Image 1 (tube, rainbow, N blue to C red):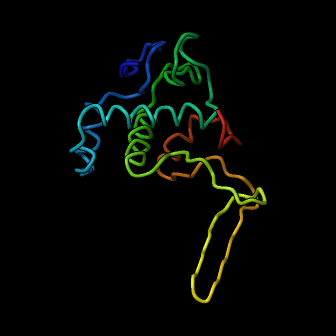
Image 2 (image 1 turned 60 degrees about the vertical axis):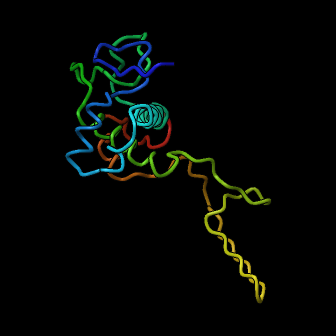
Amino acid sequence: MAFVAEDGTGLSNANSLVSVSDFDAYCTDRGHSTILALDVSAKQILLIQATDYIRTRFKYRGSVYNREQRLPFPRVIDGEELIPENAKEAVYEYAIRAHSAELAPDPVYATNGRQIIRERDKTGPLDEEYEYSQTVQKFRPYPMADSLLRDYVRSGNRVTR
C-alpha cells in the first residue's frame, strides 16, 4: 500500500494522519536531526507505525467524520469536525519513539505464564533473580504523546480502541 496522508476528508485509504513534510517541520523545530536525516520512505514507515498505534490504542470521543474513513480522525466531537493539532503532534511524537523502539512490543513471559519485568543472571557464583508483573500491560506509556490525546479519548479508557 502506498503512503497516503489524511487530508481532512476522511479518506478510506489513508494510512497516516500527517504528511512527511509536516513531520519534517515538527522535527526541525525540535532539533531531531537523526529523524531529519532519514530518507522519505523511512519517515513514511515511522508515520504509518505511529498512526497504527493511535488507531489501536484508544477509544475516541465523538464519531468518525464519515463511515468509509480508515483512521480515527477526522472526528465530529461536540458538533465540531476536526483533526486536532494535538492528535497530529501525538503522531509525530509516537513516530519519533518508533525510530528507537517498537511502540507496542510483544510482552515476554516466563514458563510460569507471568510477564517478566526484570531478569538478572549472574554467572559466578550463580545468582538468578526474576521480577514478574502482577498485571499484563498491553502498551507502554508514552507520557508526552499520550497526554496530547487525552481530550479526545473516552474517559476511563487507556488501552483499547
